[in-house]
Image (cartoon, rainbow, N blue to C red; front, side):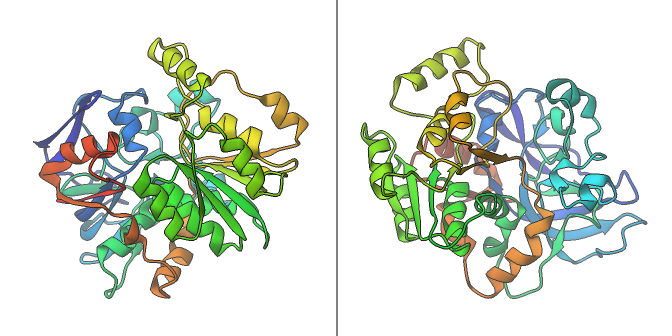
Length: 388
């Protein structure tokens, strides 16, 4: 089959690789009909997530048709059309039963590595380095899906692939980010980063009853997309950004702030220059400029929600401000299976059409080009989907 393989920083290639097969009786094989490039894939592309090996197959947002099932698979059958969540979950451990699917105890065969780094390991992830299990990803013609009875959701006819594909990751991720804000009617929510996850966080915040959402970015097409959703928009390069946020919140600050950027934050202030230098010298793994801004902007007693990926250690954090303002932090990988059914119902009711975020539709063979324009924010790129 053809698959997109990682070979180093900025080096991804479409190659012929062996077709996947049933390894465990609980596996299924899916013929992929649509897949996508996620913003967190760019952390791999840019070389900031360790544990990658040359030839690893990328991709964790995908859907398709079940073409084979293992003898112990009971819920899925050949011919089923499914969306596959990016987290691989066993369904039986303490965390899965507690609806904390991203923390699954049993699906990362390399858990000992993350245990040394973080004190514990979460679930295995498709196409996201050997730190998270070394599972082959979905930017390919076929994929093996472990624990096939647990994660995938069957999609009935009537909804096109583009409307349901993002149930695999970015729609639930933006929704959980908004949910973590504990929004009450009348709240004001600030969203840093108006990329795909930020766009879904903006729309989800309104779904939860936010009175005002502030979208913060610098890319015109992303800001315009946020404005069309009803958000007030601000350019993070504006030297008066923090003052404008206070003006929009009556001087108090947002009730909650969402960091939808994570470890590769950009900015126009000195601390961003500092972070770039330290990261280049391997003295800091992540650039937390957005997180600093969110802490400083959030109102007293507010919430900082972090769907943006962080991978290691950050420096110069205003923890005194977080402590002094009694802030609550909520973060983590998305517990995707929890949201699949309710968000599918929102799509079916036409409350949202997730395809709005797509800017580029490419064949799998053009995936390297898709990565380049998405990483460099060229050609008005907001989201790339790939057709194997």
